[in-house]
Amino acid sequence: MHSQLLFRKADKKDIEKIIHIERLCFDVDAFNKRQFLYLLSHNYFYVAELKNEILAYIILLDSKRAKSLRLYSIAVHPHARGMQIGQHLLDHAFKLAKSLHKEGMHLEVRDTNLSAIQFYKKNGFSFSGSKPAYYADGATATIMRVCFE
Ligand SMILES: CC(C)(COP(=O)(O)OP(=O)(O)OC[C@H]1O[C@@H](n2cnc3c(N)ncnc32)[C@H](O)[C@@H]1OP(=O)(O)O)[C@@H](O)C(=O)NCCC(=O)NCCS
Image (tube, rainbow, N blue to C red; front, side):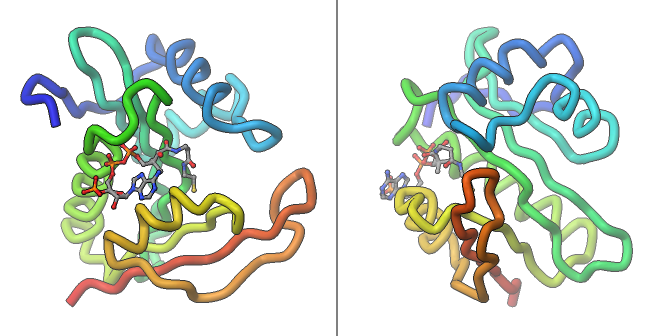
């Protein structure tokens, strides 16, 4: 991974660049501007930036009583994949979850998204169920969880 990669909180001024990445990464599931603005003001929302270029984002949802932090979305610009940027964001998410005294993390992933599933498996997540018709096009979500030691 590039040593100059900066991990920081997302800001309102980043939204257009984040939407650009979103549209390159997701189809019917892509968040729109209104959704991103809401997520920005209510959640843990970070970007990875290299030389003033936003290359990726991650959003984590915390529910105070939940023992697990939810990874709500992660996306790396297609041109920046395979460079450990997703890994860097997920490492930060693990640190955040531990600092919030969570027992683990969970997420939903489209069951056909094999590269993301591999990425999560590499990071200790395993299957814990499925949600039929979770996505707008009727596709199934696989639920994955990791528990900290
Ligand atoms: C999934 C995603 C976030 C991974 O980010 P990335 O920066 O490309 O991944 P990294 O370079 O950090 O890879 C870390 C590890 O994950 C695994 N991995 C990542 N991409 C992979 C792929 N396409 N196929 C198989 N394994 C993969 C590898 O084990 C890799 O470790 P290695 O390079 O030592 O082998 C990225 O591919 C992405 O944005 N995809 C589109 C959006 C998406 O599907 N988000 C998830 C929605 S639930």
